[in-house]
Amino acid sequence: MDPQDPDSFDHRSEKLSTGRIYHFVDQHPEGYDPRRHATLLCVHGFPDFWYGWRYQIGPWVRRGHRVVVPDMLGYGGSDKPENPSEYSAKKLCADLAALLDVLGVPQAVLIGHDWGSHIVGRFALWHPERLLALVMMSVPYTPPSPVYLPVEEVVQRAPNLGYQVYFANPKSSSEIIANLKQFVRLIFRPPGSSPNFTGLGLLEKYVQEPENHEEREYYLDMLGKGMNGPLNYYRTGKFRHDEELGLQSDLRADLPFLFIWGTMDGTATPSVMTKSKKFISRYQDVALEGRGHWIMVDAKDEVTEKIAEWLERLTCGKHSTKL
Image (cartoon, rainbow, N blue to C red; front, side):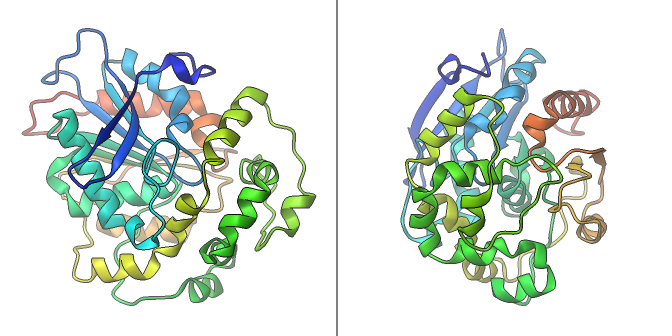
């Protein structure tokens, strides 16, 4: 498993019981035994795909875990429905549960980053019995809201989320794909350089050479398959709200929980993190000083080790699988 060589990983594609086809990487440890080796299901965010976890997969497998990393719906080799309603959190969680069924895994550790963090948090509400432990990264847990707020009102309260108004507009799909190189440079900017764009004007002005040309080209190739699916995640607010009416807010009381965040990441706001603790009995967090949003790459060794060490300290009570 060479992080610089995507083909060195074990790739699969399967049609799930939900009817959707998912592409995913499925790496087994040496001498894999499902009774002894916990499965880590890693869920990426926007605009990413399985490759965002390239630095973690190998080390976690060598620590004795089976590591499964899908291209989420709309990305890479997975299905790309056009309708935003297909990207609701409940449907994505059903896909992940169906993926575990295909793998023959009754329970797994879920690890999510960015949108993936939100999705795994919702998985803990929709499918609590399928979890051994939960790791959320960069985006804190937020409980279901009894009141629907359009994205425009959300941005009035949290101006740093202004970009979401643009992403929610259907025109952004074609505009971003037409300016994909500039978009990728902007999104994967280093910590501390945070242009608050609400359209494409800043895309044309922002210039930053990528650290690795081959990695950037792979991102351009995968994201070039279409941006409508990835952007549809930002068009699901009303669908998600309607599905979650009456859904519980507290995570399972015995669920081991870890939140990892960079202190220079604007998405990890202190007020939201403080609120999230009210709903999580076994809350733990790790702050990565001076790190931004893309911690799986910018803090790859820290993230890899802290999660691995945390899992090694855990045994999930009544569960037979040792973490």
